[in-house]
Image (cartoon, rainbow, N blue to C red; front, side, top):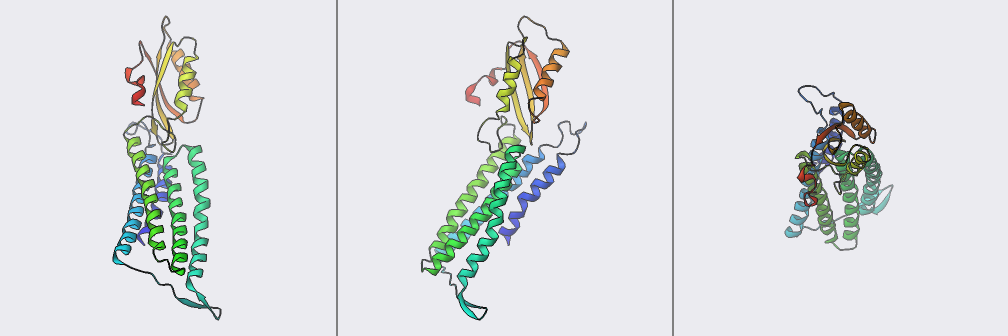
Length: 272
C-alpha cells in the first residue's frame, strides 16, 4: 500500500503547484509563487526515489531469503484456470492508462515548461513499468523460472530510482538558481539565446548577455546590455524589455540593465 500511496503524490503536488502559481505577486512575495512548481518536482522526485528504493529492497530481500512465489489454480466459470493468466490480464488492463497518461504528460510538460508535470509523467512511467515487470515475473514463474520475478522487479526498481534521482537533482539545482534549463533539464533553455539575439539586433546595443533562472514555468531574466557611443533613454530600455517579453510567454519577469561591460561570469563558457 505504501507504493500505491506514493503514486498519488506527484499528481497532487502538480495540482497544488498549479493552483499556487495563479496567486498574484505582492510586496511579501515580489516574485509570485512560481517556485511552487519546483517544490512540486521535489516532492515527486522524493516519491519516485522512495518507490524505487522500496521495490529494490523487497526484491533483493526476497532473493536473499530464497522466497519462491507459487501461483495456483482457480475456478472461473466452472473451469480450472491457472491464476497467472488472470493476473496478467488484470495487470495489463491497469497498465494501459499509465502509458497513455505518461505520453500526454510528457507532451504538455514540454509545452508548459513544467518540471513538476515532467516528474509526474515519470511516475506514470513507473506505474506501467511495474505492470510490465509483474507480467514478466508471473510468466517466468509459470515456466518454472522463479528468478525472473525478482530480477524484473530489481531492473524496474533501479530505473525508477534513477528517474527519482535525476528529478531530485533537477529540483534542487533549480531551487538553488542554476541557469534556466529546459523542462527535462537536459540543456540550456533556448529562449536565452533568442533574447540575446533580440538585444543585439537593436541598433544601439553593441553587446548583450542574459542571466536567467527558472521561476516555475516562467523565467526571471536580467538582460545586460552595452551601448558604446550611445546613451539610451528610459524609453529605449522599456522598448527593448517589451520586445523581449513579446518573444515568448515564458519571458515573465524582465530587467534590462545598462552596463559598460558585460559581467565576466556570464561570458565564462565553463560556468554554463
